[in-house]
Image 1 (cartoon, one colour):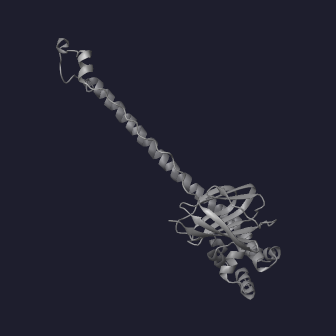
Image 2 (tube, helix red, strand yellow):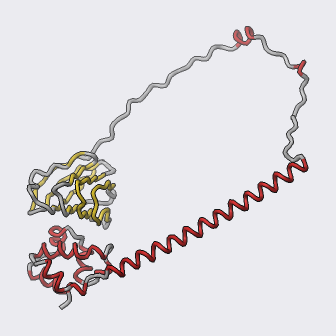
Length: 274
């Protein structure tokens, strides 16, 4: 039996639905389907397949190390992914090289044209300026300063009233409970919603929403993400939460029941404010 079919069979035997699996593992439904169909090369980052399998097996109570050893041949080829990455970088370099050469050729043509224009202008007096009117100096009468001062009223400067800057309302949140290592919050959102992450060490982070957007799917130490207005629920997974801080619109997220849990899952229910 292949790896995907084996994992799907174990999940169904445990009575875990796709929605429950998403909440337990922090993996989106479409990624779970790719794993269970043995289509690991179609993952957004095939190199992250071992971590995803570890999250999946932990959610259904399996030994992840044993599974990895048993199905090692079915995991994505890192060398193939590396070759694809190098090929893509080489194509980008070739494209940049062509654009740069075209730009330099254009600059050279413009420079030659400008030099020819200067040479022609120097020989034909093309750039000589002539006055439009010829005015005799003795015809120019300077106005009397006293008359000017009496005839022109003094201008009064009116200062515009200054407006005091108003602070934009921030998102308010409330803790609504937990289930295992999953913590639930209600966020009263004033658009745009910004979620910031900062950690002492690198941690695996996934940040997605129910509208199909993926904001983070990688190892990182910090990041700032603006959430789509179409989202109603936001899912956040921290692989190593012990040294990580989460901020909602700049305000620290308080977690009263985090304890010593290493991997934690957050589910934010977004209540849109008009």
